[in-house]
Length: 104
Image 1 (cartoon, rainbow, N blue to C red):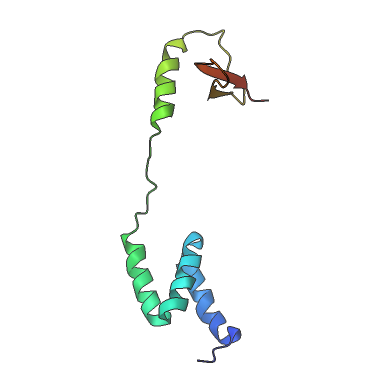
Image 2: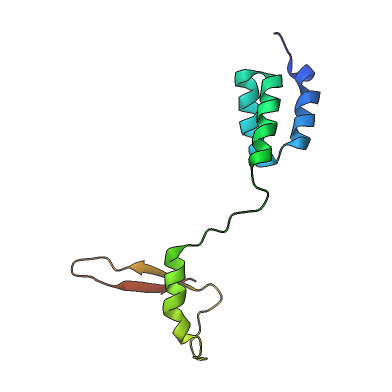
């Protein structure tokens, strides 16, 4: 086709305005593989199917930790600090349970 980068630039610049930044590599790869017209139609249809609101994914481990620590919320002397703590499983021979370390 012999299309130079300068001839492609106005089309690419208009595509950047319409496409969200994180989807731009997908869009450019699709244009390269199937062509400009088909890619713009397909990508436009795909973008309309994507949800605009972020999904709320709950972490079951975090929920369990919150439930376990919720009974300690009345103790005013319990200080978690600004950066908090890291909770890990204990390692080593015969070790069981968890180890908590303060994040410094």
